[in-house]
Length: 109
Image (cartoon, rainbow, N blue to C red; front, side, top):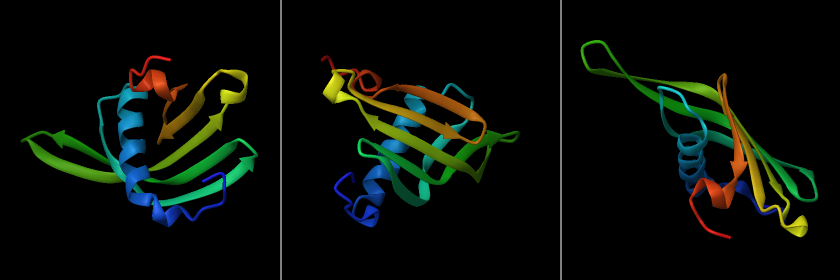
């Protein structure tokens, strides 16, 4: 993405990854279910901002599923040059989380 590749080539994979990252970083009672309308913008040479809408699913009374869209955003910053890894700040609606990607997925450095 930093090399200015088109986002639509990666949109489905990114949607799945952002869903997994949100599940690992954001503590809330909702179920995240992918991003739609994803856009990206390079903010700095090592930072990309993503925006779109995240699908939310939740079971209501009577065990009926309800789903809706919430504003989604993520700022991904590559700090590997200073040996700090790749950091992500992610928000879905009013919920926010932040962390280093390898730690989010339990990868040892």
